[in-house]
Amino acid sequence: MRKRSELLFSLILVPLDYLALVAAFVAAYIVRVKIDGRPVAHPVAALTFLKLALILLPIWILIFALAGLYNQSNQRRRLDEVGKIFIAVSGGVMFMILLDFLQRNSIFPSKAVPIYAYGFGLIAVLLVRTVVRAVQRALFRLNIGVHRALIVGSGELAQRIAVSLVPATGYQIAGCIDSAKGAGRRMKGIQVYKSFDEALDALGRRGFDEIIQADSALGQEEILNLVTYATNNHLAYRFIPNQFGLYAVNSQMGNMAGIPVVEIKLTPLDGWGRILKRAFDVIGSVIGLILLSPVFAVIALSIKLRDPGPVFYRHRRLTRIGKELYMFKFRSMSHKFSTSPKFKGKTPEEIFEILGRPELVKEFKISQKVQNDPRISQVGRFLRSSSLDELPQLLNVLKGDMSLVGPRPVVPVELERYGDFGASFLALKPGITGLWQVSGRNDISYDERVKLDIFYVEHWSLWLDMKILFKTLLVILGRKGAY
Image 1 (spheres, rainbow, N blue to C red):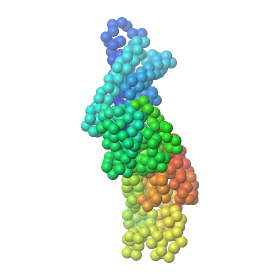
Image 2 (image 1 turned 45 degrees about the vertical axis):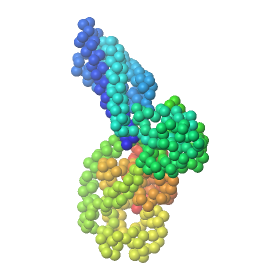
Image 3 (image 1 turned 120 degrees about the vertical axis):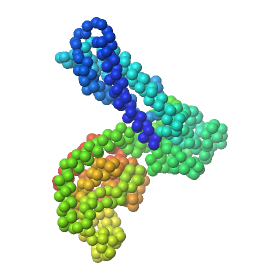
Image 4 (image 1 turned 90 degrees about the horizontal axis):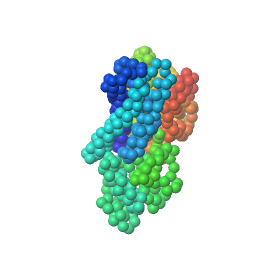
């Protein structure tokens, strides 16, 4: 809820900033061309000017993003934000003036227009952000989008952070952990717990969504336990960087009450990256479903004619944060293995035992797959070797359960194989394809697949996704390692 609220407000600012800049350019045009009685050097029709502004102003939004004006944080300092707005608007105006200089036909009817637009733009963007900030603070008072922070320590730094986390910043202090004498007196008005277990018993799993490690009085093992709990439960964890021995592939510097803090992140896919990946998934799945609809029809007909029964197969897997999903596939197994009294309700291992294939039981336990599975139908064998059985997962992607690219979807029991990296694995939605599929598919060991999945989670980028999709096409055409 906390991160969704931050992301929502960052997202809302984009169209509002754009409209504010459009209004600034329209006002500048009206003031110089319509109100000011002096003739203009380059007459430009109002509609033509508006069209140019609408086309060019998205560049300003990009400049705003590069200036950090859409970063997710309830701790934005007003003075810092004003400074960034000044730099971003100034950069946008300089870009427009440079573009006007390079054009044969002038963009502006008068040199005064960009100057007026600069002033109006500053005022309009500041006004928009003041209103948004006021709305956000009003929601904070209604307990909407609020961070509930658990502070570790009661020393000077912890006290400074506690004082800074007022409701107007979108924070509530759930409590403090410190077993030292006098902690309750130092952290006035805040419930103090002697241990993390005591805090957890009192507050419950959903009683806080962020841990702020202010003091380093705890032992390294206790600190690592806090980090492990935070990552396993997808909570934010921040610490003041005077505690050695902590490391994360993705970490982000920030400050609280003027004190530098580090936030540990499981993956770089957060905030705007998540929106970008979701947009990429929706567009890709829609295009894929449209282009491949004739293939869907042919496969469905082939399954029905060769082995009567359902065309699709649903299998329970895990998606982000441990939620369950039903993943769609074209049915590749003979229908008798799910309907015959002899096999119905049996696990794969039990079926292999019934079929007199004990060697397959061992293979399945190691890889969760077998190369020559006797349950696969003739059509299903082709579908698996060509990976066409995976196509219905485009529906899962469109629905939002999966991504085009991501870690492999696993059944709940497989999560144990990821050990301490289980939380990292569940930080992203599973994908139709992924790093392990383009790195050897079923020819690599299960442990190597786990390592590749974790690497992908910790090093995600949109460019990496595009490379994996391209390599997936090559792998499918080569039909290597699929069964």
